[in-house]
Amino acid sequence: MSEIVQKVTAFIIRERNSIKELLVFKHPTAGIQIPAGTVEEGEDIETAVKREVYEETGLRFVEIEDYLGCFENELENNQRIIAETTHVYIQPNLDAMPYKRKLPKGLTVDYLSTREDFTHISYIAYEYDQFYEPICIDTNITGWVPNEKVSAQKKRHFFHLSTQEETADAWELKSDQGHIFKPYWTPLSPKPNIIPPQDQWLDFVYEKI
Picture 1 (spheres, rainbow, N blue to C red):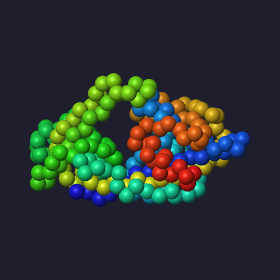
Picture 2 (picture 1 turned 180 degrees about the vertical axis):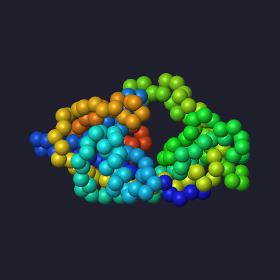
Picture 3 (picture 1 turned 90 degrees about the vertical axis):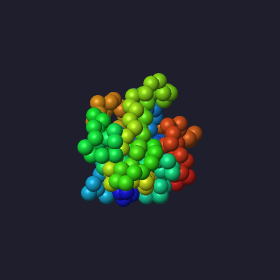
């Protein structure tokens, strides 16, 4: 079993006309989100959170104002996280046929069992409508991955950031997977509606931002 997989989340705040606003973005099929992602090999968490902000909002110039704390482990007992991009095999054997699609680092999967050097996992991804209601299954994989490719520990770090960049109230950018993200500023009060489980992240830091 691998070491802890580190995650980061960015709460980017500005104040306009005495109103605090939070930067979120609308994913075309996955609802309203907060910029977040996985710490890559060789990165520190501060570098990772700024990279994720750029990738998901396009903002290049952000400053970390405060470290807001962390969730020591977001995983349930029946969950694991992919610690290194990996094939999934139909049998617990590297000579077995792998699924065509690899599972990327940072992906949370369901844990089924362990057999010697392999972990039996399941992953189902849904396609959602604009209201984040599932409409069909996009991916359904059940198989075996080497033990060193998964971890039972996912630690999430929360940061308060600011930016001096002048932005519109809303804009668009293309993600590295071809999706069109739509970042926009939304008032912090009343509390914005964010997709689960990200709504729990906002609850955790709300009084600090």
